Image 1 (tube, rainbow, N blue to C red):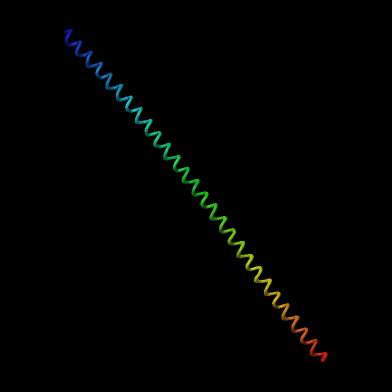
Image 2: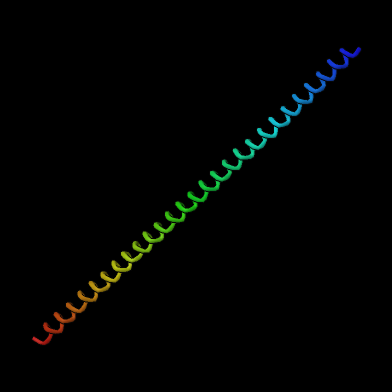
Length: 101
């Protein structure tokens, strides 16, 4: 009887020790999983921020290119008007000179 009781107590201690080890291991795994998830989330946020910076840079480049293109268009229009005015003034001066001769 006493021997059986001692064996049961020993088994009970062993079971409690095993449960404690399993709980400790479970908590350790949960901590590792939380850290892994946090690292992944930080990496995702960093990647998202980099992507937003790239998008902002590309949008800025597009805006600059559009401004340059508009400048070229305006200059072309200006030169076309100057050309018309020069041709018109030459025609007028030729006509005036021709009338007075």
